[in-house]
Each structure stands twice: as C-alpha cells, then as structure tokens.
Image (tube, rainbow, N blue to C red; front, side):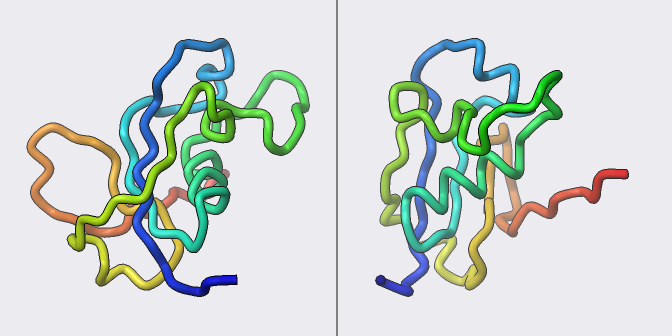
Length: 105
C-alpha cells in the first residue's frame, strides 16, 4: 500500500435522496492515502444523523454515480500531513487549513 498522502477533490454530480444524509453538498478537498479513504473522511465530516440505522457506507460521498473523486495535483495542500478534509468550496476563501470537526454532544 502506498503511504503517500495525496489531495483528492470530491465533486457531487447527481441528485439523490442520499444527499439528506450530508450536511454539505459541494466540492471538497481531502488529504488521504486513497480514494476510498477520501470518501470515508468526507462522509464522516458531513454526515447527519439518519432517522433510522443505515449501512456504514450508505451515503452520497461513497456512491460513484453521485460523487466524482479524483486526484488533484495542486500543491497548495501538500503541507497538510494528516488524513483529513482540508477545504470545502467557499466563496472568497482566504485561508487554507484543515477543517476541524466539532465534537457532538
């Protein structure tokens, strides 16, 4: 397994009821070792509490028909050395730093 962290860009591409399981729907940049890890980190970061229990990988960020996950060769996130969501698309974003997940109560 390659241990190199890479930058992945995830882009929603299709409507689905599964998007109700995500608090965010837009482009996301993630530092991860592989595409599946990037999808998992994004799903965890933006998941909402489902009304009923669902399968672990049942969400829009895991489904290839709903979300494109591709390598991004831009070096602006190379300094981030931990697997995490580093940026979501924001208007007039000025700083680039890892997003911190709030602890749920």
